[in-house]
Length: 248
Length: 67
Image (cartoon, rainbow over all chains, first blue to last red; front, side, top):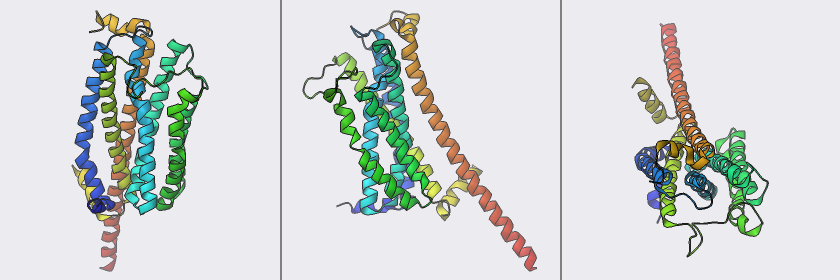
């Protein structure tokens, strides 16, 4: 069933796949972010309670949702690496970690800049904010552990286990607003059946989420190409590729 | 359009500082990350090229010694 996947265990094929996929993710990023953000910033109506400060939502919510999505994707890549012993799986795992950390940082920062005018504080140690901060530290932990080993296969195994254990934090982040009393508002778009956000505000948000997905894909592919090169530096195809690029 | 003028748009109903701070820092951090990845790639390339040049020099030196 998955035989078609097998060639991508070879780093050269995986590198070529990165190049093939790049334009699709890049165009999704440029299109989604420009349409979503311009729509959200200029054409969505002001909120009746929060005025124009709510426009931070068009970065905050996509980055927050996708920092969790990227984490799950990273953990799945780690699991694939552990089960099938694929080094390209470990490589994609470690390529996603810095991108996820970046997106997680953006969600925390925009949350703080939204919290200051609305709640009166940049930061508070409540359930949602704290669990999201732990997510950032989990990304750092995965990277720190991976780069602490000089043997990359060992590094992949150890980091994958940490990544998998950390998945427990994802439902905690999601349900934190229901389980504990928190300043943070509940979900608005993922409420099953009846979203509590007006369509005129929701559609630009969905487009901008799609744009962020494209952006994360693009950044991950860029990082993955470097991870592959660094790991395979001694291979003839890498040497040839890089010396060709240098002479260009 | 939700704003009457460009000044209105910048002011963001009085929340301009927080809105533009969010957008600015997010944009900046993404740009810095891209710069970092590009620099990493360039360093790897330079490493490979330098190594190849060294290997070529060693090979040339060995040949001249054998003569």
